Image 1 (tube, rainbow, N blue to C red):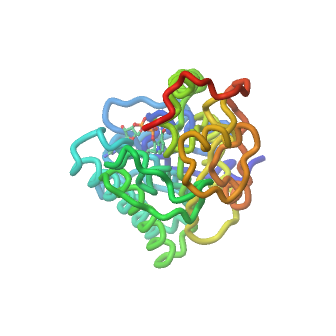
Image 2: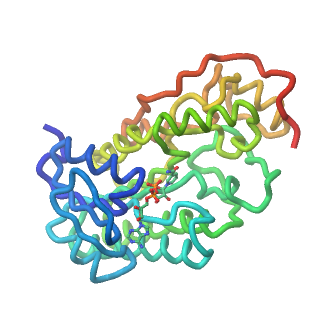
Length: 298
Ligand SMILES: NC(=O)c1ccc[n+]([C@@H]2O[C@H](COP(=O)([O-])OP(=O)(O)OC[C@H]3O[C@@H](n4cnc5c(N)ncnc54)[C@H](O)[C@@H]3O)[C@@H](O)[C@H]2O)c1
């Protein structure tokens, strides 16, 4: 029996890429899932479906009936998923609305979809920007120049506020690119031909089944407070040694450790320490030398 067995969990964005797999996964672990999704969307695994808008006080109140645990995934998940106003307003109002109403109804624990973008560089204005250091870690400073990244950074502030005011324990998972293994394999092929676009994301990825498992662990942990941290597969989505590709693309960026083979240059220790997470579904790539004929300059 799991800790979520028989407990009612609200999943927002339940019909989405991560939400649909998460809803099924939580139901398989015995949770009673209330799915909040948009009108016209269908979802498997939920025993209660509420069609509505996460920005609406009334819709979220209806979705929270009898709920003990919250998984908040609904968002416009990219800078270009709408106008700047829509992306920013949808994301921050939804997170504020879901967390504050959940807290006031006695919910004690929530998991929120954060993003690697909360530190700003991957969707930022400066395509030549380099992280201040590798590995990307929990404390890496933010340098934000787009509205999606700003929304994810401010969602973390909302979680802190809700924890301070109502004592709700909240885990924010700063997801890297999350997708099916087939889609991740296609992206890996592109980055193998040209690794440059993956630099600011540390060539990190996560299979959507691992994302669902991390969400479950975030509901089951006894970690207190509002914690936000990175998680990813332990290896990169390119076949080259991490030290070689960093030597080529970011020779001036300080490294706080030496990376072994294809080790992802992202600090995964908080994910393991706080929720016991280690990814299980990895890309099957054989390590090879950096070829001379791929683009390695800006
Ligand atoms: N997939 C990734 O690579 C990735 C990476 C980092 C973070 N994230 C975050 O994870 C979460 C889920 O992402 P996803 O990839 O499943 O995206 P998705 O677009 O597939 O799913 C998001 C869902 O939210 C719903 N939604 C949007 N606005 C809504 C509103 N106002 N009311 C109700 N529902 C609304 C959409 O209908 C959609 O089903 C998002 O918060 C996203 O920012 C995703």
